[in-house]
Image 1: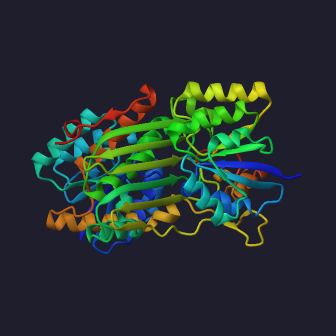
Image 2: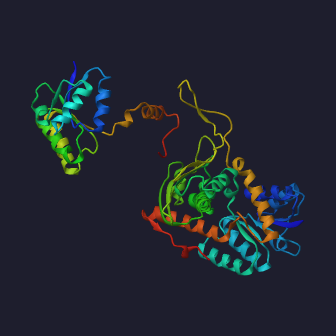
Length: 335
Length: 147
């Protein structure tokens, strides 16, 4: 039975807490949060104990899940490394890419099992796409179309402290594009607008964007990102290859048309990312627990994969700002 | 009143125009022309068009109201210009012209002469795209954020 500590009792922390306490291979040994009341509330809900960060990294703890606020990831990861604790860290590893590279290099040297939480890799629908590509179902990949639109836009004041459209949302799909193809981008071009809330413009953010990646193989990836989908979380991937086409089975969204031709109708609850990807957090945790035993992360993203996704998010901002193609070098993220 | 059209350029795309024009009232392809008169005759015979000729005959025919220009990109401008100078409306396949200035000149000529100048693509007139446009105009999804 592995003793897992959770750092961060916010929205993602709550998801992890439930999954850790329900997984029969581990127990939720300790929880800490900058807000002690929040930590205590979550601990009592799961029969755990709220404590300090130091105690979360103390003797008897086998691994740490880092789900604290984005700006604190780097410091917590650094402390984990200093204490010799393996960790699974929510993205990004550190707000600053250079700092992330330093930490990832340190983690690599330490030999500790450290992963980055890019949970879309554990969605059955995306795993099927990858298996089909690797099984040569569609020949060589030429084009990938990715749509990700969120059920509800995040508050502009939150987005300022998280990764923004390209960091918070984009990095998942930049990583998926690489993971699906076992390839990596060499060029990026992004175009962004503010169409949902002028508050995004006030914090130098965009809420609607297209990002094109040109992979080293020449394959092209087109991402369509939006913070809004009035009809529920919409995530679709289409992969076009030399021998055919793959599409993920989009879970039904609440938008339909009538055959009588009276137009489009909307009704019922709109699923959000929590609904659609609840299972992925469980599967990711389970794979991480296995990795703690075997040392093999499997499909859990390596820290370096996270650095690449972060590098691409940064490049997307640069492309929007400078209105040009940004060249991507592996030297920018490879450790 | 039936609008009388002279078709110039008897290549592959002309078959679609000849088939479709037959379905519309108010428009009739009355002549087809090609630089190669044999090609003109074959096309006229195939679709029951009254007159097979060369382009100059179309420009000179006072009974013809409009020219349908289906020639190759390099000749699009010359054919359209001659048609307008002969007082005929023009509709042509894409590309309209191969040089932007030529295009501007044609539009100016059309305006000065009171003649219409049209050009493909026209696929947006199809049922599916018109339906999409109708739905967008009715506001079912609000303001479009991307296409």
